Length: 313
Image (cartoon, rainbow, N blue to C red; front, side):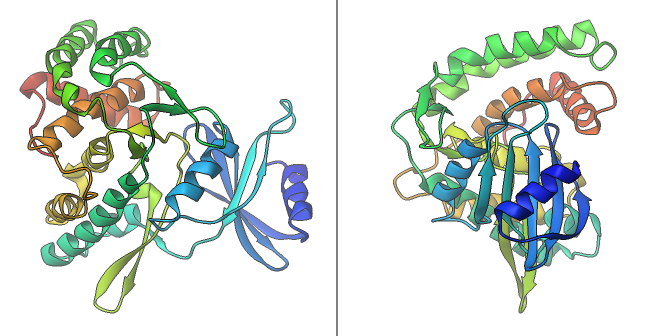
């Protein structure tokens, strides 16, 4: 983090920096907890256009818990990175809660159900077309149907996979598997709902409330787009083998229960979500050598090549 960036944020908020600490960030950005003279905020530098992300967060915040955006600064050149400053939300990262290993199956199921219900509510936000946002007003640039894009996207990603992560035979088999299942997306090509696109335990804050659980915030909306919400469910379940017993069953039930009334679940929604996740898995394995999540994604690719696409989230 650059001192001048942090001081500039504090000045823009009418305060001064007391202490700073680095928080876990994403692949494309750095995140910092700033303790200012009048409280704490979280600043994130780099990544995609923060003005678009701020617009997404404002739309989502009417339906799900999302931190308030306090400041957005566009990047002007290499010396001034784009930044977003959000309110600090007190809660535990879901990743840490699940990793502790002290949840019984019933409690893990209850936690999963609450997370599933909140994730499903993201899809209440609707747009007039599918695609990616191009400005802070959330104008959507219409994309070709996902069913028609999958093969092309996967082939491009396989050509960019670092040497040694996936061998040539596995890359070819993965592209063929994706092509074989791409038609499953035809039934959801018309979905135009808000998709978070990075729903995983690191981006969910939770806390205990009485005898249950509450979701305090969904974080990191930079990859959001208009499309099918089943991809969010598959994203959460991607590395579900590492979760405590009961969590995923609860998550599935909560997600299915809370789907918007005007968007009834298709019968094979879990399988469709897995096929949508092929986009993300294919992109993840292109990350540089040493990227831990990319290596996990490569293991998933090898498993699916060996046994096919699971029909459940």
